[in-house]
Length: 211
Figure 1 (cartoon, helix red, strand yellow):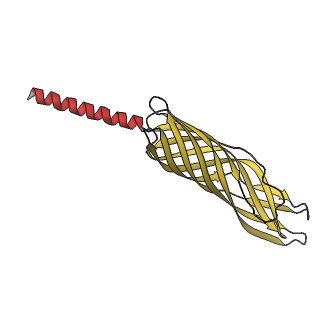
Figure 2 (cartoon, one colour):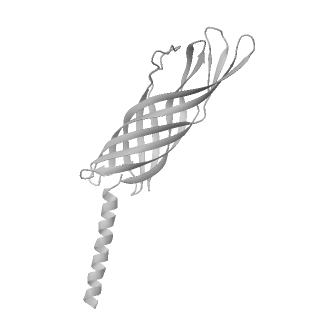
Figure 3 (spheres, helix red, strand yellow):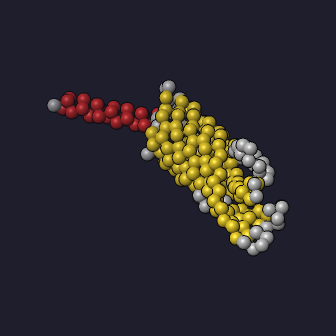
């Protein structure tokens, strides 16, 4: 009986250790959630007399995020998808150079979706370098008063593509920190715009919780 109890205890201990090892090895596997903040390239347009009048600035953005990842091929390669919902300091004003009236752009949120492909390294695979590509959208409420005093309002939706690089590091079994840098790409096609979107770098920091 005593010998059986010892064997059972040894089996339970080894099972717990094996589970802990598996959880430790798969640092980036499964569902996760988190929050990020940073400085992003914010731009919006107002369509006035066949011209898309663009305003642009670098603004603070706070985002909530969630996603799912898989660790493949000896846990080295990480593939995942991520959804983001952000709150931005995206209000802007610009003067129309043709008529000299001021156009107001009001924005308070944005959404995004990205695909991430990364490589996990370190003895316990607890560091992750990754490439990201995705799409985002910001909605603006546009208002201005023309030269004869009439008020005008518009809704503008700015869609853009994003690509960049990131790095994530575990600080515990279920918590990691992240930094990424990205740039946006927007194509207006044949639409006449007042200026090209200036090429600026987005930089974000995040805290991630593995669920």
